[in-house]
Length: 114
Image 1 (cartoon, rainbow, N blue to C red):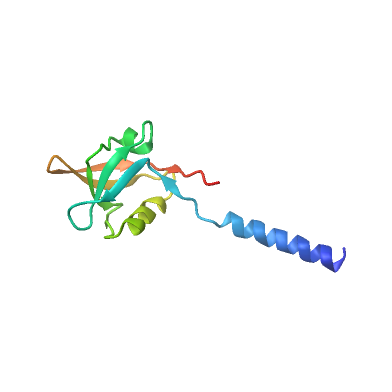
Image 2 (cartoon, helix red, strand yellow):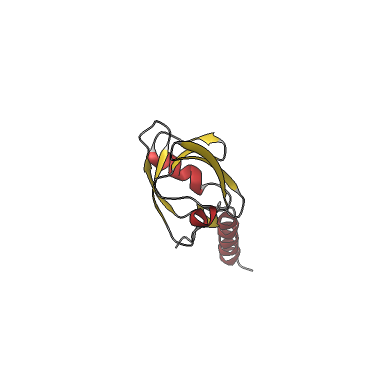
């Protein structure tokens, strides 16, 4: 095998290994905004037939904790916290609905990325 062919083979193999280690992102199927209270998220919409709908999450629910962690106070970090949860593994959310706290469990789907 020529050196050029060997180098190309190693580069392709290295690229495949790097691709395999890329963490999978999760999808729960909600549109959120920062809540009125600090460190909360307001559920603006729930996508039909999504993991969020199947778990019972509803529009106007307020997310207080994600997998036991306080909700970050900026939206991009909060969304990243949700999408970084392992797909297929139950994720507890502490929510407020009608002034009462309630814990629900969502099993995120894997986000299909182009």
